[in-house]
Length: 261
Image (cartoon, rainbow, N blue to C red; front, side, top):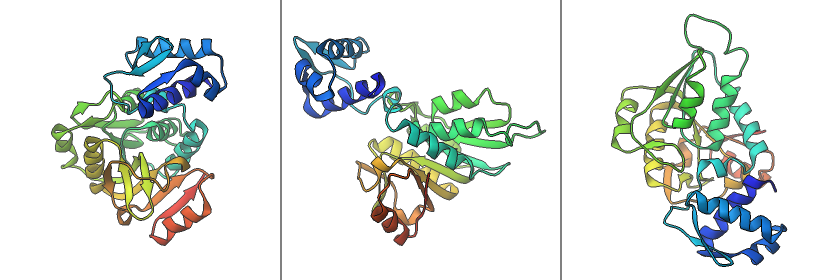
């Protein structure tokens, strides 16, 4: 487990338990107590927790993990999913990307696709996104046209949400939207932890001809707080090859094409 994976695990444990102990964490994560103390001190400096003698307690932050810590989870799977999703995009297409670590990998894969980067009079692809980090990474790519929704930024995910984010989306259509999700269930559909993100993601899905969910296998068969869209609206699921065969078959029975990478 590298440092960022350990930091995200620490925040997860703290969010579930409310308080943590250095010695217990050291035993649980198989590292030294000194390493845990340094990690907790680092997170306290960023005001993500409050240090106590011998451990830490929750701070006044929402434990929807900041994107920089989520990125360490299932990183290789997300890179493969990103490449697989990017391969589906045709030159001249209009693509929607919501926020998240997996959709960020899709954006990166699109940015370096050799056939899209060849010089042309018009942009090779148009990206519509409500994610500030994705817009920032792609804005320097001359072959990509970036359209950013309005809205209020959420610091955990860099997503723009709220009424201002809906105005632009109501006036455009997209060929494909790639949705990063917090959970997806074969019967009930795709979910996000935050209702504001779910709302803007739902609108993006409504404005697209094709809806593709990009999710690593850890998110399959799970629920979260707010539904983005029902299973019947999802055309394709791209996930990693650790997805169970039974779950994949269940999605396919529900009419979702599944691509594992």
